Amino acid sequence: MNIAARPRPAGRIAPDGDGLTGLGAARIALFDDFAAAEPVWRRLEAMRPFASPYQRFEWVSHWFAHVGRAKGEAALLVAGLDGDGAPLFMLPFVSARSLGCHIVRFCGGAHSNLNLPIWRGGLPHVAGLLAEIAARRGVDLFALVGQPQCWLGVQNPFAVLPGQPSPDDVYTGSLDADRPQITPRLPSGMRQKERKLMRLDGFRYGMVETPAEVERILAEFRTQKAARFAKQGIRNIFAQPEIIAFIRAACLDGLAAGRPAIELHMLAGGGETLAIVGGASNPQRFSVMFNSITETHLARLSPGIILMSHIIAACARRGISSFDLGAGHAPYKSYFSSGSEQRFDCFVPFSARGRILAAAFRGTGALRHSLKTTQVLMDALQILRRWSNFGGAPNR
Image 1 (cartoon, rainbow, N blue to C red):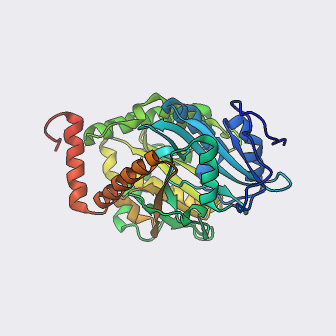
Image 2: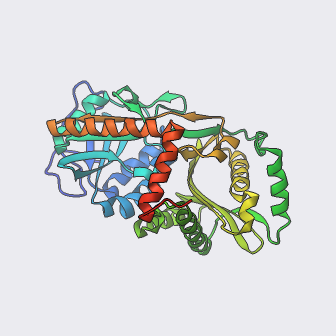
Image 3: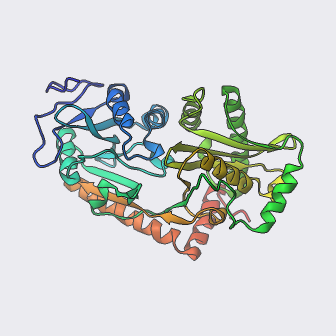
């Protein structure tokens, strides 16, 4: 790959020097679109780097094509290359102007539970690396949120930056291929519910395998989710066409090979789809992105929990070594998770405006963390959400 210095047209590699003093990489290359970055990204993926399912090229590129671009964000993909031109790391960033600042964030937004660089070694001194990117692109602030402290037992390279706890942790569990059974911590009554569900005509668990099934299951997911959010008085983000377009494209990409960027799992019986879970996976992790359950009387039999038990067992059989149930607390997560992964946020400014905005983001993040970890405040927040969404008295 030729990375000689030249003007930076869209979709081409930005100017690169012969090296970055003290950064440990021979040079970095900045890409403005995914097509230009794809060969380097694919080569890095083939080297089995440290990365979560949310850094898979297909997942990230579909998110950007449908969601990031619709939000007015631009791709800013940063590759580190060694002296032979082999990739050492990729930083999957997007940039946008907001609140008078040029802000850089991880690709994926709120749809990604695990924001990370992609690295295999030689990741440079990150503060100096961010300073180099900021100087090249006039960045005021890096707002890098929702990051795990470690991945596969290795420290996240960005964990050396000043940070603070994210508002939500990710609830996790380990998998054992030799014991792919439902967790014994499920209450005994859950087994009785499963037996009742199994008596329904056509009861089955499955992972969606065809494009026609993707369309049908996504349509049912949208219906189930809309009904549930309406009951809870919560704004339905899945009503936004760009989000469904992203999910559909990621579900279809790789489906024929049995490796879609987003997997759809479902539990069916009694002539209806009882529960749906969508998630991303790689050999190290299955990560839940979204879920829904029926609004019929069968909801009392906890089909969502039963579906999750089948997914966990199936992941163990596939050799996946861990799972997470997404960010944020929910009672059902305690049935499966053995702990949680602390996530952190870091805000790194490179201008006076960036410093002001970083202080505001830190304060907002700390307040949200306090709300999420204080039950009384969390209950009050739910009431306020319902009040604001209905425009009057909260729905009880």
